[in-house]
Length: 71
Image 1 (tube, rainbow, N blue to C red):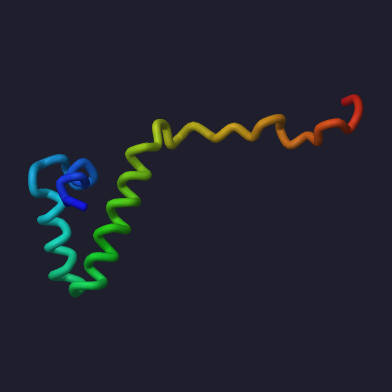
Image 2 (cartoon, rainbow, N blue to C red):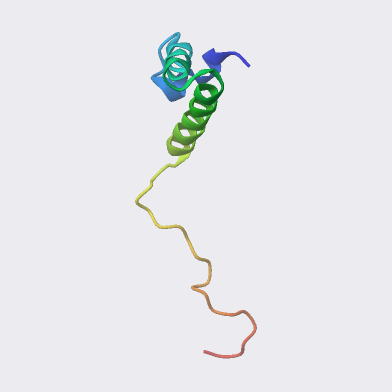
């Protein structure tokens, strides 16, 4: 896959993903640097997709069992 696809996770500038991957490979070595690059990309992608991190997730019916009679 082209690294330009990942520029949004690494600053959005042209060549940012390639520069980041190169720096990570220089720091951690070829194989480990690639693993760190994709792990970082996935983490940033997950963070960008989360609309409001402070809002708690809905728990449905408040944990009450369905069909257990009246309240």
